[in-house]
Length: 199
Figure 1 (cartoon, helix red, strand yellow):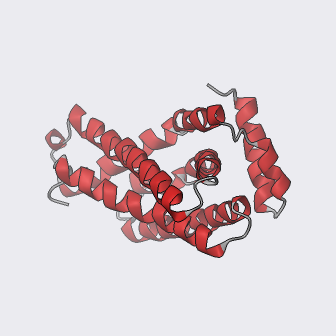
Figure 2 (figure 1 turned 90 degrees about the vertical axis):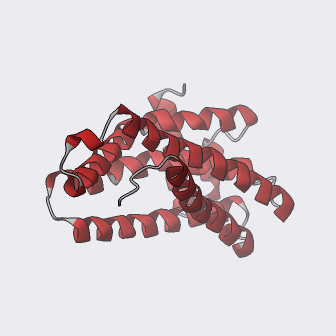
């Protein structure tokens, strides 16, 4: 597992890339080993991930006041949706990249966005705190979630664009794949698990 100092080093590189300095990519471990190590980012975002599950629980209980509707399996299903969609998205992206002629950039894109997710998920935890502690905040929550989504897409596009050397078509294709596939896969997995059938 990468030490916190290493993660901070990676994030410093991403910050340089976002500032328009491609040399920031040199801070990342873009080797095959670095690809697999980048998945440790899921451990670093575990606290905000668990907080998001509590936010979903709050939403469910606002519709079904009976706590009995939520059991231990509820959290396992949420995890299955999260991590299942992550695996599916990554596999599909790698396939799209290979057949789209930019397979050489795909591992670096995955590595960079995996580490980018660490500060973003921690920063966006306030959305879940609003949902948990501010009753009737649906409009505020949806607004902040939309703003967060736009910011994430913008930052992701800038990083992808630097990695692929400024090819707008490749950057747009990558971003579209990485944002549309998770939405569809999460919906399908949730549907298959009969998660939140009445919402």
